[in-house]
Length: 231
Image (tube, rainbow, N blue to C red; front, side, top):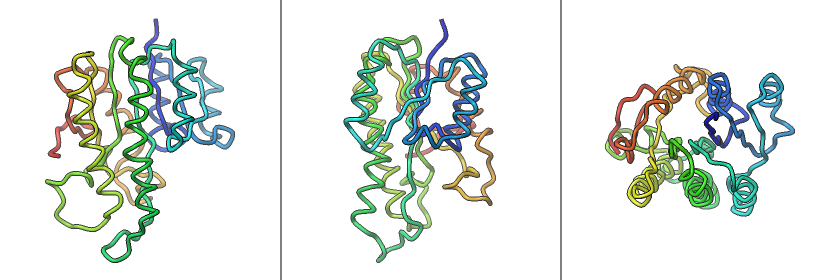
């Protein structure tokens, strides 16, 4: 039986490349995004494969998460990959923060991965691999912050790290591995055209790590090359 991965934000960038590489390696891919009708590249990819199913999901909507989980209640999910995320406004310097924008970033980058974990924990627990992976960032590392700024994005990724660390403790008795990934500086809409890492390279790194992942790695913060990072 094919193993199954559920990916959020699968319509572009790293999410699209994760969909591609897992499908190419004979996984069943449950690819979700906010607007499937507008996800042309994802739709075209699914048209050439028989192991990609596309679902509509706005991760900032708790009810939408619940509906999808109910629709997939009998589907064991080997890997839940919380990839969807937002950067927020480019100007996040001291004196320029906006409360509404900050809450929006936290809602998508922190609350949504937690709600996904709560909604899909039974499906993950029923699988063989039992992994919950979430997309973090080196910008969320407190130990690595030597330049300041970017208050909204940094704080959201730091908070995500704490959420996942607690998940790794709370779900350990169910054999579930919870990790955070740093994708590198990736050439996406968020990373910009000057970024040094291609989405396909980042996704390939994650695939290789996840294929070999064990419960002993739960609670870790890892680069796409497998290096452990400081929180």
